[in-house]
Amino acid sequence: MSLLATPTPSPSLSPTPSPSPSGLIPDPMEVVSDISKLCNDDALLCSTFANLFPNAVWAPLVASAITIALILVIALIVRNIAQRLITRVVNRAAVGTSFTGRLRRGAPATDGINALLTERRKQRAETMGSVLRHIVSIVIMGTAILTVLDRLTIPIAPLLTSVGILGVAIGFGAQELVKDFIAGMFMLLEDQYGVGDVIDAGAAIGTVEAVTLRITRLRDADGRVWYVRNGTITRVGNESQGWSRAYLDVPVAYDADVPAVRELLKRVTDELWNDPEYKESMIVEEPVVYGIEQISDTSVIFRVSARTLPSRQAEVARELRFRVKSALDSAGVPLVA
Image (tube, rainbow, N blue to C red):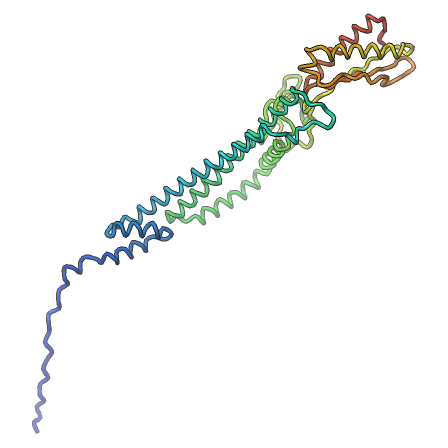
């Protein structure tokens, strides 16, 4: 038995095969798979580009760019459609029936009053249409911009949080401003007053020269201009809405012939009503002689009333005074204090 171990043959080292040239070219299906992984929500669009350009690494970028362009185009189209709908509704509201500006039952509707109401409806509808168009544009374009930022992988959560905090801060700091805008919106919707109306706004009395969502500009009888915030107006007295009334008190002596005086005043009002200058442009209803309004130991007071177009009552009242004075002088009926 031999003590020498039989030597174990060492393994022969075979040369490692060098990679084939074809191994340096990636498989097109693997490229398509890698490109598709770069797309999140654009799988269909990105896969289409990957299939058309299997070796193009810019396919996801082109797909994202096209997606962003489509978002902006769709937003512009939707905004345009919404603004057209608002414009159509505004035009119909401007020429439609007015509910808030309708005259009371029994009040005659004339061409002059209808023209004024139509103009007021038109102004109110145009103002509300402008506000709605701005709101629609802000909402639609803001949503589109946020969507684009999300497509660009820009985190919008911090932006939304910041905007929310900023909105809360502005809301607390601008409570009066928000109050003014809300009051202005309801004022326009309810048609409380408009440009050219004579109103009593509490803080000032005068003719309305401008109305916005925040302030109302008035000019009083002395020519002073008042800027009144809409949120501070708690009550409004409108002297020019629908129709106005001109009235005249005629005091005559206690021993005057009451039927004769009443007939005289009735003749004066009939002449005024039949005057084309006043009937067609100022007076909307035949003037009325109410008869004895007050009586004392020295005088008897007759009252004459005429319904007029808005803000024309002063002119009609002056003409009534002139004609009544002339008629009483001709009849020899004196006026008493």
